[in-house]
Image (tube, rainbow, N blue to C red):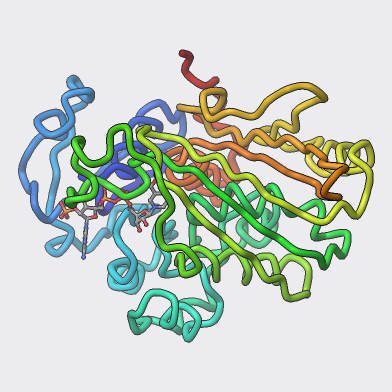
Length: 337
Ligand SMILES: NC(=O)c1ccc[n+]([C@@H]2O[C@H](COP(=O)([O-])OP(=O)(O)OC[C@H]3O[C@@H](n4cnc5c(N)ncnc54)[C@H](OP(=O)(O)O)[C@@H]3O)[C@@H](O)[C@H]2O)c1
């Protein structure tokens, strides 16, 4: 059994890691860390985990010595300290290892990168596109939730040399903002309320653009507008593109590109993509439409932000690092309704 620890286990993605890893046949959660909840049983804080015998400990007093892998489910800027203190395998669910260029990270997050030398050991953890590099890396920068839904939905087309417009409108549930409460996250404000935020300046735009460039060797400019909706989980992204090929050709391209990918489901004609069909699972659903009148291809994708958009994908990456079947502990279907 591989021994794993989770820093930031008191947060939403940390809790989702616990939920899924608890069923993993080849690894054992040995340590769960929280600075604010030291000594408390996880079921005191998350009653859904009643029966799991694990207590939080403070990461600052630990040398992580007996661990094979450390998940860092912490905010941007907090992961570098732990990745520097531990020389085993690290999967960071935040942004500290998503950029090759520390200056782009600093410009995007407004934080100086504390360990730029570690970026040489890091790989962007989108398994469907960078699997071979991930397997050989010590550190994985697990992708952001919006970028996962957008890059996977664009990859087959941009790899053909597509150089047209890319305009993306995404919808997200509120768990994407994490467990910390803010005024705009109160039920009375969020419920029955939907609208865009960070229009033209969201921190995921440079992550999407730089990783599309890593994939194709070309620059891609992306217009990205996220919206918050009164749901707990889920992201759908609708992407407007020039109609550089027929709908039939595009469907064939996507179906072939993802034919061996367990977690990518390219929908057939007449089938809709909706968040409900992926919630609680590590799947991404993708559908391709066309608007002949406006001469556009329209691609829609859906994921669960806490699973394929965070903790599920992190476990997919862990399986690759440990040379296990990629779907180990992740081959469950979405919940419905
Ligand atoms: N939520 C999503 O859908 C989603 C999707 C993709 C990626 N992400 C990324 O994943 C990371 C975690 O997100 P989340 O939604 O789980 O956030 P969250 O619910 O706010 O939890 C983050 C946890 O990190 C701990 N923490 C904060 N600063 C720390 C530090 N300096 N050292 C150690 N622990 C620290 C906090 O626990 P204590 O104060 O108890 O230590 C907190 O509970 C973020 O980088 C986020 O951007 C989130």
